[in-house]
Length: 95
Image (cartoon, rainbow, N blue to C red; front, side):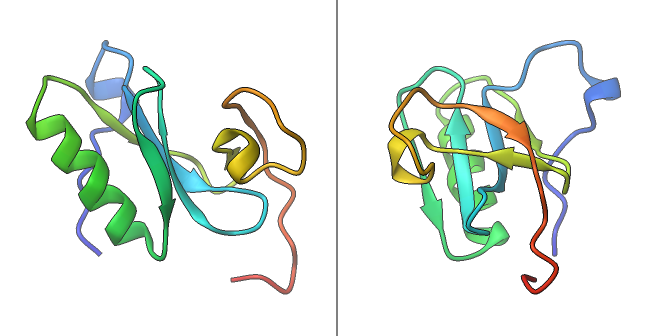
């Protein structure tokens, strides 16, 4: 897989987009501005979307740590609510 993301230590600006998995294991793009985002079939597709959005404006993309859950509001969480990020509890049987 191609690495698109700059590490946080290399940049002092807060990234606009976070790419990671939700608690179901789906790939999610979370927009810090709350304007766009989505659920994707693969990490590459999610990164492609986020980087495409960044091409239209100056922004950064961050890949969430494996232990981090990235939810897309009521679309991916089990309860309706705002976009959130929380700690991931991996399912041993899920890849």
